[in-house]
Length: 145
Image (tube, rainbow, N blue to C red; front, side, top):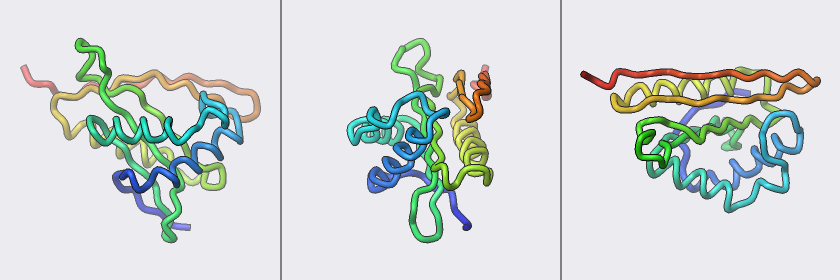
C-alpha cells in the first residue's frame, strides 16, 4: 500500500479521529486513552496547528488517512518561537512501514523552512511489549544574529 504525505485540512478531521482512536485502542503509544479522543480534541489540534503551526497527514491511495503529526508554537510569550504540542499517531494497521519517521522528517523540514522557529519537544513513547523509551528532540534552526 503506497501513501503520500500532505498538509492536513479541516476536511481530514474524521480520518484523523479514526487514526487516533485506533492508536489509543492499541495502547502503549499515545498518552490519551481511546475515550479521551473526542471530536473536540481532534478539532482543537487541527485548528491550532493549521492556524499557527504545522499539521501533516499520510494518506493512502484510496484517501484513507494512515497517520497524522502536528505541532504549534507555545502560547508562552518567551517560548513562542518553539513548536510544541507535538503529537504523532499512526494507525496500527499502517505501523512498521516508516510512515511515522517520514512524517517527523517532513515536520522538521517544514520547521526549518521558518527561520524564526525552534522545534523543541520531549517525546515520551511507550513501546508495546513493556519497554519504554524517551526521546529528547531539540532541533535549533537559524534565527539570525
